[in-house]
Length: 80
Image 1 (spheres, rainbow, N blue to C red):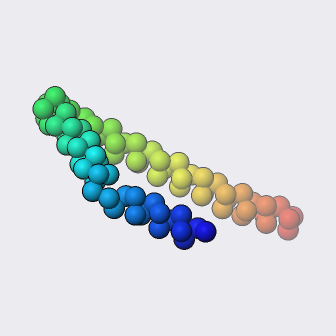
Image 2: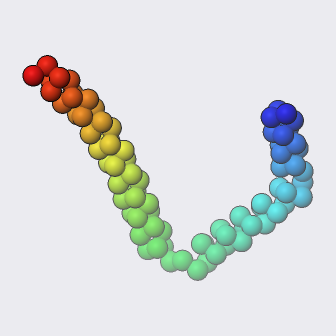
């Protein structure tokens, strides 16, 4: 049943009408970006996205470190 569902979705996405709709939407979106936003906006958006990604990576690393640290301290407390 799962395979049939996936095949149905793939067959729908492969139709030309869906491709044309996606291309039309992406063209409108890109035209807006290229005509309405000035070049400095690209730099600002890029910096914001990079800062956001760095923050997400830091949060994930902190969570991983705290989990490992808690395991380490729990083993030390068990031996004392």
